[in-house]
Image 1: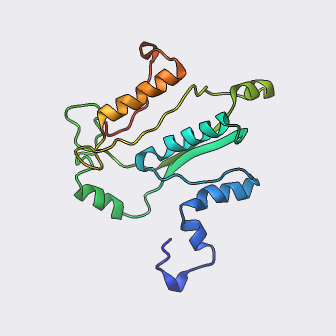
Image 2: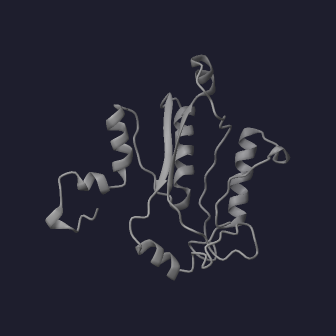
Image 3: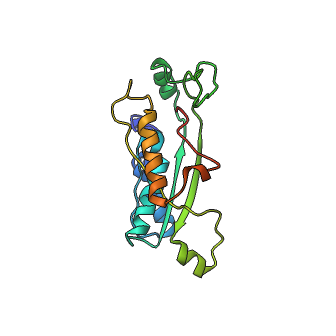
Length: 181
């Protein structure tokens, strides 16, 4: 939906196409009355949302956090922009952590997680699919390009998360990482 399409504009198009619209529509539908916000942190938006939800639980701001992310490609414009910037893999293959890496591949999708303090989830007999021990987020700072990841900064934030949770790095069996690393 484009607000520039003035002859076809309807009353709710502004709310529906604004970034905050998704979060606030969910809050409205389910009558949720705590904080409701959309996060725009490029590739890190979902992780920043999870970290924000975790922080809200730790500081007792809320007893439950519904967090997640969604990416929808509504227009070819972003593909063209990223292609011209050299960010997209011309062969359509992601090669994270590989010397042959030549860009990333865009996709669509969405996911939601419900976060709750562990003690409360146990008392309530909630069906837990995982336990979030820690989270950490950071900006890469100056790199060889604003769209290029900084492996040193990413290593630092990973070490910070492990230290916060008291987790030995050798005990890690799986890492979810930035796809352009």
